[in-house]
Amino acid sequence: MATHQTVLILDFGSQFTQLIARRLREQRVYCEVHPFSLPVDEIRRRAPIGIVLSGGPQSVYDDGAPHAERALLELGIPVLGICYGMQLVAHLLDGKVEHAARREYGRAEVEVQERGLLFAGLDSAETVWMSHGDHVTRLPAGFLQTARTANAAVVGMEDRARGIFCIQFHPEVSHTVHGSAVLHNFLYKACGANGDWTMASYLDEAAVAIRERTRGQKVLCGISGGVDSAVTAALLKRSIGDDLVSVFVDTGLLRKGERAQVEASLTDGLGIPIVTADAGADFLGALAGVTDPEAKRKAIGRIFIDVFQREARKFDGVKFLAQGTLYPDVIESTSVRGPSAVIKSHHNVGGLPEKLGFELVEPLRWLFKDEVRQLGRELGLPEEFIGRHPFPGPGLAVRILGEVTADKVALLQEADAIFLGELREGGWYEKVSQAFAVLLPVKTVGVMGDFRTYENVLALRSVETHDFMTADGPRTEVDSMTSG
Image (tube, rainbow, N blue to C red):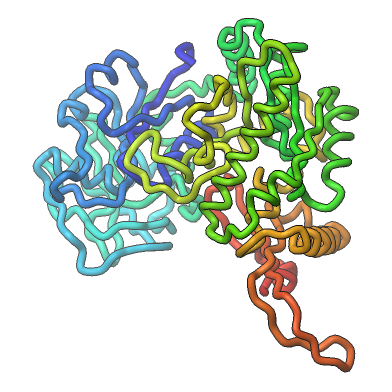
């Protein structure tokens, strides 16, 4: 990646930090996320064309709040401060930040007072996404105020001479209508980006990195049947050829008919030989009596590793385990880059034992869901496969609230098949990003024909999203199918 222009994102704990990376890459600019404490000397050594300071949940004036060095703002490298990042700039440069009388969360209307650099080409009023409880009440010396809202006097400021640009709202969130334009202005007007990073270049570099890492040794790739693991396998096949061993784990928690579909699509459609491990009894046994969602995820992760280790012993020289781990998996499972909060454990992140027995190969670890689909297209995967709705590695276990049993899995498989079948028949499957059924741990009274029934409750859900990090409910007649 060193051949590309790079923007560094310093993480101060926002759950949107990785989404900033997604938006910058969308602009064809390579970026890396690092802890807020990355030393200034290391930043200087990396020679980025720009630096982004992320949002964060704390107050800059609190004891122990994450701070960057003031010298960061004196490197002569363009800086974009977002939310907490803006407040930190004000705090470091002797402005003033105070607790707001009213927290501002959700959509807001911004009045653009001076277009400056960030708002060039935008309207005088913009719809943005806010999430803050503090605000800047005094600008640092040399800064121009560029925007405000009814709740906050300063939501935009810049010092063009020093190349420092700040906004209180989140341009990376899709609810900020022209957020991409704001980021484009920073990248191309302030940083001088040339847009040299593409998924095709990522493919070439990832293939080289995989070959250098594995050094001709065998790699076992875990296949779940979803797009992520399929793209991982296709990338590995391109990179290391016959050194790839692909294992599809039938967890017994798959969608109806999915085992046959996966075996056919990967072997016949993609030319990737796979070994199927029938492990349904193992997973159901580990989940017996378990009701806590985190405990279920960790149990599933443990069984996956047991199966991989068992299958690896059938082949000589397997040293590496490849997984389709994505950026969102890492974000939600653990704070590896900064002080972000843990959302949930993923079976391929939070469930891994300390003594794994393999070296991990995760070529998609810093990619987002839609980037993976782009990569799949570069690898030649068929569009009908790439366009499938995401399905979690733990399968239907995370869509059954409470204990997972074979009877519940069978019931949910049938209900899920009916729901998705209706969406396809009505032409809505391709129009929504993800749809699924959830079996709730309650029963309710209903009527079937002329008789009273007392049966299980099923929730139907569908969402629209571009990045699989933020989502809205679909604004169509499919709402009537997914309202309960």
